[in-house]
Length: 135
Image 1: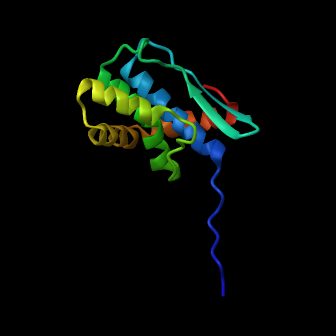
Image 2 (image 1 turned 180 degrees about the vertical axis):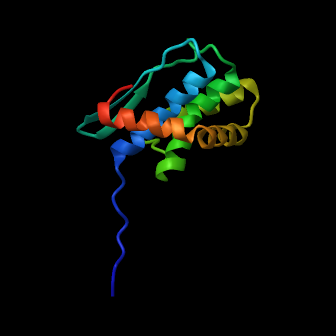
């Protein structure tokens, strides 16, 4: 009898794809704003960070929600894991959705559509982020 083992996920890769999803969305919706992302390791594992806040956002509120959800959508599409450990993205998106009267499920669908449409660019950004630790 053979036991099939599922390979342990590459957490660094998941975090890189998650952050790349944010960067690509940020660059798409805010062409005149620079977005940077980092992936670092600590004793607790891999962590990512993308620079952007609602205060500095120049797009619409709905685009900001898609930006927040694009990381998890991209990671789920490309790696099978959303990479939300320790992330406030979902809570932040839920809060903005309530404020602007948009259904969170609708926003998640838009983020998934964004990730599918921009998959190639997200993968390219994730590859650079994975190799260099920053973009």
